[in-house]
Image (cartoon, rainbow, N blue to C red; front, side):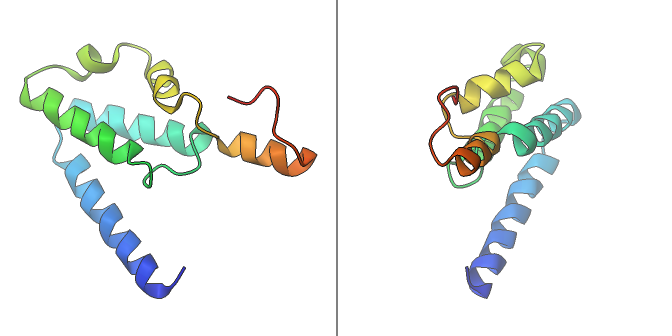
Length: 108
């Protein structure tokens, strides 16, 4: 990864977070909780697969329609996130694989 890639990545991240900051307060709070959760247990590539930008798109549409964030995702943020990442490899899966040298049979 070169310096240009790092700079471009920072620009993309700042633009992404500017979109998050433009959301209504309840959406911002839920998004940040989802982001924390996904950074801890989520898939290895959050921005490359457009997971986080896709969530912002979904939230922007919901806010534009006047829907509350709980109407969109329900009451369980973690369950909603788990549904989003589905069978994607997580950091735990990658770590387990590095220890055993083979894919984890219980991995998602």
